Length: 309
Image (cartoon, rainbow, N blue to C red; front, side, top):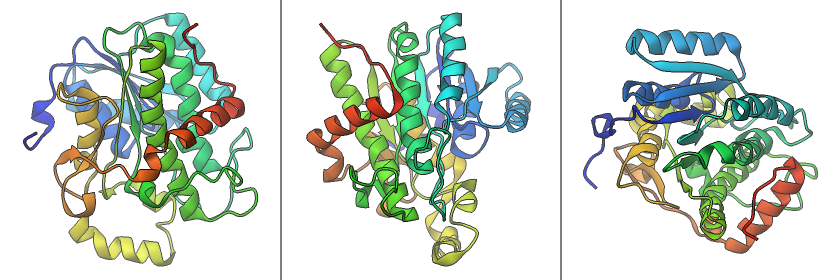
């Protein structure tokens, strides 16, 4: 695949997309380009005020944009269910679900409204529940896609079934790595389950490399060694949020994108560069762990997935 840019996004005027964490950073840039390509885009996030601001910004860029905001707090199963129920009642198909939202390396152990460790709960379990609840609308699409945002942090990740919620011991970086490994494993397992049960999905994943967003600033970026390292590396080994969103946009829109594939920057250590297929580390390919994670996630979230009888 040659160098891929937003100019390669096919017309999306017949598509309806939902993007989580769309009020800033990668989610905003993804939503902007989907709207620019003609898609109807549902931006979701925790903050109504940030949602209004994001809508205003996109409308300034794309006056004819078909966009709206829906409140979804992925740290609350009740919030997820409230919005998905409304969307299910509307009944309109969703062609593209971009599971983008996330929090990073919270210094102290925090929990979601449902008692999950906040990174695992927000980054992964919330998206697991959201995808399950939106499956009926995805199945109404002729060619539905689900794109999960992972990270190069998945490379050192481990699914610690005896410490999923940091209940025995909490360390910020391993918790983040676990959540992003879980997102990549979810993308791959979702494709396997879709194929086995006839759900008709294309499921893949992407990561932004080292993108300059508020994610680090809102997590570990305010102090410590990682903050200093990030600031030192940023001028040389980072790129903009718009560039960081390109792998997601490729996975979401390109006719050449593949099921169960993973996309990221193709430059040094996949930190920067044009989007291309990224390396999936071995632990993400462990089907036994993926199946166990799926079953545990069903029990934790109460998510219901249809199975072929």
